Image (cartoon, rainbow, N blue to C red; front, side, top):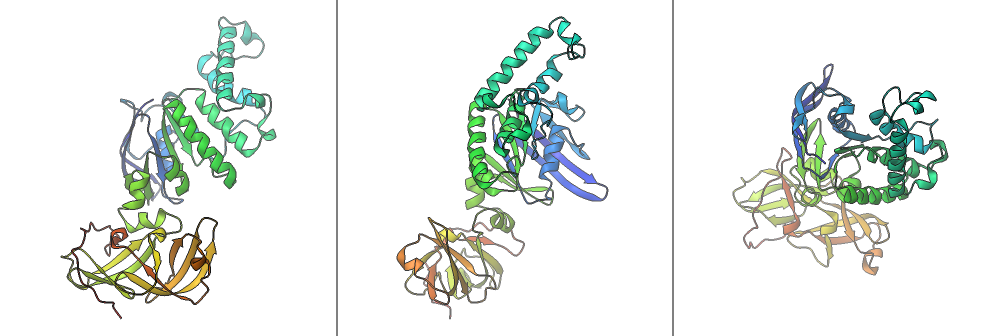
Length: 388
């Protein structure tokens, strides 16, 4: 195991800046995920750590040593790629043993036929076969060792790629969207397998994905990236409940967070759509804000009032354990989303039905005109009138 430290990394391809002053500490034994949309620089960052790309500026430390000048094979990292990167003409056993053969055996020992006659070659081959059998058993691949990659399912090939990384016992595992080629059922299965693998190995993992479900379910911490920068680093719970920016709030969570344009009307009162909320005092009157609230924080009520949106149902979506209700409110171009249990009163809602939906003040997120989160204190008890 080892910690990974990135200091001021930057990367440009010609005139295109891909990474901008990225600094990050990954703790020994931590599972850290780089999360962001396509093109944000997360895969480039992973390739720089692996030594497959050279940074334009900054340094990479693995353990206590700078590895900027080291070739990938000397960095003691193993990388699992999106495309598996297995040799199609080799059996599973041969794919797993190849990294050990290249590392442990000399050029002469690797030669066909006469290599086995070289001193120590037989002992090395026996040790390699034992290590391959051990990792294959750990990932339940022992019955597939004589098959070739073309004879395996997608999930099996991904497990072989994981086993090939494991067999070297690297200090750091690097994973570049390893599940993106799998169907939904296999992705769920492989998430569980990677989590269990991490628990057994107690190793350092750096995982790249654009899938927030993978990031939220497997990670100790998540680094959210946009435009070549890390905009927020924290636990999955922190990112969800306390996003640092509107951009992070929109990216984390499904269905997407509800965002409502608002204006401060008087000291401590904010008007949003057709209702009012008490807010932290001291925000100048007329300030433009954006309120954010998660769909599951909203709930149906019987009548309008402060902190209650009145709207018309656009449509409903039944998704098994939940019912999603899309409804329009005054002044909003996009519908808001309510996530609720599929109780009879909710499932009976039809298009154009008028509903009243309460937004608890303690569940509101507030963003300024630049998209940065405002830290708001619990408001004093304030008498509000419905804004009509």
